[in-house]
Image 1 (cartoon, rainbow, N blue to C red):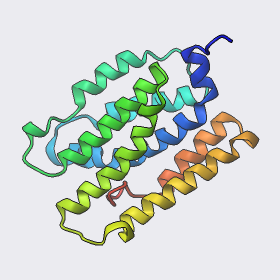
Image 2 (tube, rainbow, N blue to C red):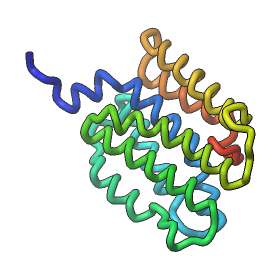
Image 3 (cartoon, helix red, strand yellow):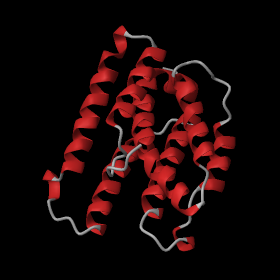
Length: 187
């Protein structure tokens, strides 16, 4: 049996990529605040790259050069050694998550896709450790992350009855409706 090409694999797994793009969109608020506070990075470029992934997932633009987008992202990824503030870490996590998403779009890798979910949760855990919060698994931010993942999974599971653009729109709207990043920053 012929192994599916990367494009075929991505086309058959677009729901997983869309789910992960929604998690990256939620983390983007962390990157945005970092840019606003430091003048570092570039929120517009970050959001544009993410929007290109959304277009690809929706089936609206299949001619995106993901390697070129990866190069653009590298130029705006914050270096923790250049900043003496905690906010660089959640911004870096958002950049790493977007980088993993671009890699998956370029060459299918389930482990990289799974790493986005892990990274989103670990960003929250690192934030809680940084602020000295000891609530553990019952912390509202972790509960909100679990609820978000469940909501996004529910949307993706309904994807059989919706067109790809409608699924993408529903995922994006769900993240916008939350109004906060994964660490509780207003989006």
